[in-house]
Image (cartoon, rainbow, N blue to C red):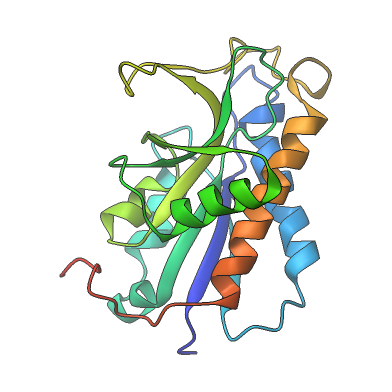
Length: 210
């Protein structure tokens, strides 16, 4: 009950009229596959998988989850890997990104960037909100969003998401790249494994007061 916790999260909802193959059946499937692969990891870390509803309505599921955590429970969580839109076939995207709310590196993003280097599949660090990593960040918990995207090199707030985002064309046939899904699985899975293999103690000094 006092072990460090690493979380892998995804949201299960879509919007009206969109089948949601990439946004976000892809992230849900990734989290389920990592649960299957890592279920016998044998480390002293609790590996927790969470599937949220109502992300598209204002992060309602993840906000509720984070808000109901006691301070002691929140302090146990040392990293959150949030998978959202991890398999698009949109040709203009350039990288799998580890997005933090403030654009600054943290334990989760760093682990993914290093995993990408080991695997020869580069991961870029970026700044982006609007997904389920936000409530964790606001609680002082290291978290990152994983998403395929193109970000303007001159302005990190200018980005390009797939053109079929929130449309009826977000289907498996029209908007899923097995190769990008595989890359996301390998990178995030490797990063999660490294974090649970070498956990940090809870109650580190970066934890926000209150």
